[in-house]
Image (cartoon, helix red, strand yellow):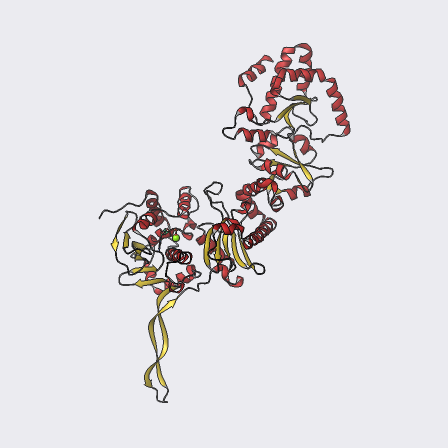
Length: 636
Ligand code: ADP
Ligand code: MG
């Protein structure tokens, strides 16, 4: 019979795995048991949601058996089983995204040391086995199937025998080599320890035949007439795991490390979470929850593919895998489990949405998550900054979404880059650091912090000793616009035309000078036509000759943002109102004044150059490069 090839990716993964993981081979057992448990979950779920599935909860079990002579370890379950098609589809490809992530990270050269610690799924059996046989009969089918593979070179599937529905995964253990003594995986006690270590909380009983010893009566009597006893051993069917899910256990009996290890396995992450939140609520609605804040965003987090949600259980039985209604969207990065005896098992998705208990849990969890993030911000700044780097955009999006309905929840959690401190700060920190007489929160929008610092208008603000926050992410400016103000301090774009920072005297002097220069300014405006909306003398420039400001509601960043939306017709684009500001104290202005008197053509060329210079400094494209260059040469 011809061997089928693994799908290309699986083959690569398999090679990589077998060759690169030397430690942590022992995780294979956890993976195979967790699949057995999933298979039982599926059948159990079927039995409670469909009427004609006569299996009973008490009968479900997982068996781990060792055959030293045959060198095999077999994990059996009486779960849902697999058809031939299931085997092809599930064992012939990398089925879960965890494995794909794993491969991606390997390819990107990320830390490979830790990979052995997270879920690599069914293929991990090849870490210890040189041949794996899967015998399975799907629930409701008559035919069993046998899948066999000796590793990367492919697999076969043929007809087989099995008494009842369920699956046996038979792993033929490798011979010892210089890297590893595989024989230890044929030892009952090693396996028992591994089950306890990694699979203790599995909800279904994991049975092993273990040797038990006891002092037993021999039937003879001692000299004093008491029954004679001797040490005898026998094999006994033993349930090895405690079966209490980790989130159901007493807080004191579960360490933070236990929870983190559980998270990595359950949610296929190779990084530890930065926080574990445990909730044990009693009252109007009782539930237990164990939530995790991941360290890094999954690669598809900011795409449609990412499915947020918490796992929902009712008294230890999973009723929904990704329950979206338990989390506000702004916290969609949170993973975890909620278990409530108050929820009905057969609850339908639509009903869930309107469930009152569910919405109580949700608002409670929302607070818990917020508190935990605030705690991190306060106690563990570095971790929080790392978190914000990954998930800050999600929080900001949460503010913009729904027109700020969640602003109160989020406004103290977001950060922006401080120009003065050169690190991320919160709005609270900005306001606390405001100077005497400062009544606004200044911000500069630019594509990078370096560019923001070069904005000519920044000078006057910083001269006053005021900090400026740099908005470099697409959503930053929308976020501030949605918030409008923080702690009653309005936000102020340093690019907007009047910052109102000068003294009364300075303002007066500027007004007088502007009055005097009216003809010249009109001339400049005329020379520039509709390229600008107005031309003014600047009240804020110090060393720079010109700058471009916006007037009104639309800022330059907004204009750029809308221009980047694909398909938006040119005519309907939002445009910022452009104000060309000229620094009357700059030699360039004197030169312009002189040219205006002596040589109008030259003055016109200068006007055009001034505008183009201002555009360049604002990080905006110069409309006509050729004309720009020609105007410059006209001055020679
Ligand atoms: P994952 O468990 O994350 O889906 P695995 O590589 O561990 O990925 O398993 C791949 C798939 O193989 C499972 O999703 C399941 O469909 C199937 N499978 C594995 N073991 C069993 C089993 N014991 N019973 C039924 N199906 C199984
Ligand atoms: Mg699995």
